[in-house]
Length: 69
Image (cartoon, rainbow, N blue to C red; front, side):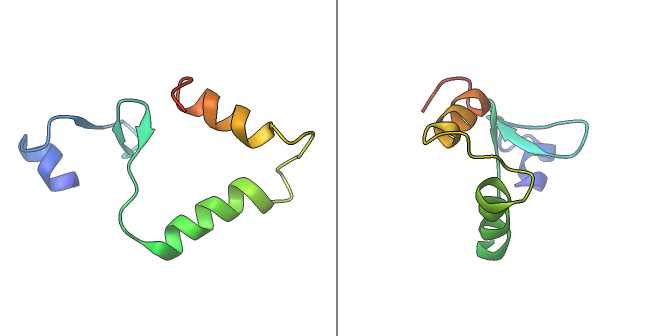
């Protein structure tokens, strides 16, 4: 994907200053099941994640996607 964006083939995606590839306000993740599982685990099970209520994940996703969920 990175090569397509750099060459101008894929114009709907952008490469941010930190190297992250995004589509609108959504992060692009390659088809890597281990990486996706790690990200999901961090979002759900990390010691740094708090679960004050059943709507926390919904609100987190809503704020991350700009309300488009």
